[in-house]
Length: 437
Figure 1 (cartoon, rainbow, N blue to C red):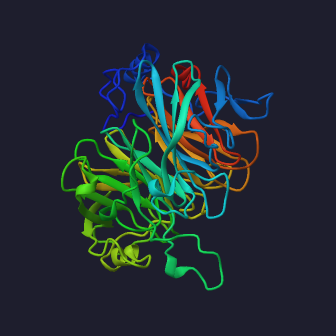
Figure 2 (tube, rainbow, N blue to C red):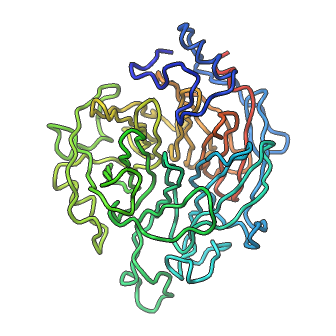
Figure 3 (cartoon, one colour):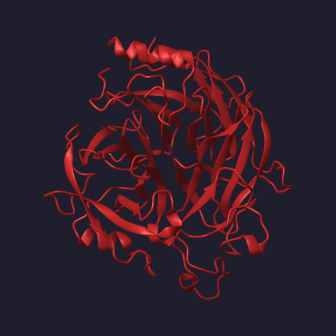
């Protein structure tokens, strides 16, 4: 393994979020510093699970909780379609998880709250918050955002909140005649959910744009927020808030343009491993009545990405997936360097067996990416080291439905992840320091 020139840490024993890491992970950084190579096999072969839930490498364990339909602490059922998720420090050894539910109109169980606490009284989506103790057991859970639509992914902020993204731009005017009405207002926004507290005020972050939002990643140095859009012809956006951490205070929305490559389609013949200089074009109409933000971006030369989905920050870079991008159509991973202001195609799948529709993405405490597959066949969590080499970390042994919401506890010892359908959340732990051993 080669270390990136922008070392994801300075080998100080700190995580990407500044949390002091446990000693096994410190030892791992020491191994990196000595130049010892890392095997493309990752943590080793997957061991078939006798419970037929989750295949993992030797030495790893899991615990399940918060299954769809379970009764939560607030008396409501756990909603369906577990999706994007982030982990926060809850104090006293606890971890707080804020989790999206990509619930479509008329699906149940929905996210339940009183009408006065919902963004749209008719919409079934939102988020739930879970508190997990140091033994990885659920101690409390409740609805934390309600009345939104198809909350797909999102991302954590450095100031301790979750941005939940609506992947739906439906309006009441677009509902055909003689069909049931299932929204009462415009959708296609982001919402901020504090990690601590009860039900959030459902205030749309209009200045961040109205489009098919998928995920966000925040540069903690600047507070700039990078956004993906799940469309076959999508843009990559940057939101520059007027004030650090105050998203309700407005800001400037921009789209990524590759210099001297107007409207380039990054899914076709785009070179891998070659950083390209970037400029950002301003979006004027951030809240259109129709789904037109990306077309304004393209008219100004913005690059076209195929189904931008998961996003994360790590190694001083912004990473995102393009689920069906690339020549083979099975997915890409891009990375953006905010300091050099360059974008690079980091990974491109050459076939379904290598990487099958990467969706949600997280940066691990040991410097790799973990990708959640959302394809049509067997589904895996796929690891990517800093050399761009892939390995399989986990297999969905229940069905062929997608993984979603991968994230790590603040101490770096537990990965949390969802299988969307049937909705179920896993806590996974084991010998993280044995990577490539």
